[in-house]
Image (cartoon, protein in one colour):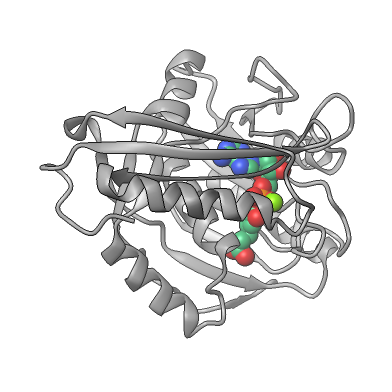
Length: 272
Ligand code: WAQ
Ligand code: MG
């Protein structure tokens, strides 16, 4: 949330990570000028201590300077909802959109199965995303429990206001949607990315999405059963030209600021 022109300001990345019983509970972050850090830190701590999943035991706030000239500016992805009646139809339809993006059916299926089983070796959700070979479905990230964390992205205050106005009128103005759009927006800028698949780890939130550079962010109201606490993210990459270090550095370290929302496209039915 940035109120003033970006390039003249010295910016900071401010990130919160909270855990409970040794498990990841909550995380959030912003890119902000110096003057906003104190207030943002307080808001992030409040968020960690009032999380619906329990009160955090450990909260870490990290602040790092970001060189203003290195910040990439972009527009958020276009958004559309595909109506599905239940999570089975949602998965089937998500599989279709992944194929449209260029993921093989077997790779898409393999990733979905891995996410359903929690993604991490102990059967819980990963902290970050799995990186998946678009053809074979093979996992490419080094740490299957942590995965790759997308970080250092935010929107300007103007873009946030425009986005929220567009979301409110569609009954979609909640933190899940806003944060997922920002995260997917950065993922879609990654060199070599073909698509992203995501569903929430919040037991009460069944929605998820498929995003791809060609069609933006396509959301499905149901991608998992209500009450399911395992969620995840899979980023699909073409193996040719894939460079793990470059991809991880981009996703974790390079700052991206969204200055405009994407377009909102009409809802579709699953069979369309
Ligand atoms: N980087 C990579 N992976 C992440 C990150 C991150 N910064 N944050 C979360 N994940 C992974 C991790 O495995 C989580 O378990 C999983 O994603 C889901 O995270 O209605 O709420 O924050 O359009 O629970 C999408 C649909 C909601 C929104 C996504 O994700 C809509 C959501 P959550
Ligand atoms: Mg969650």
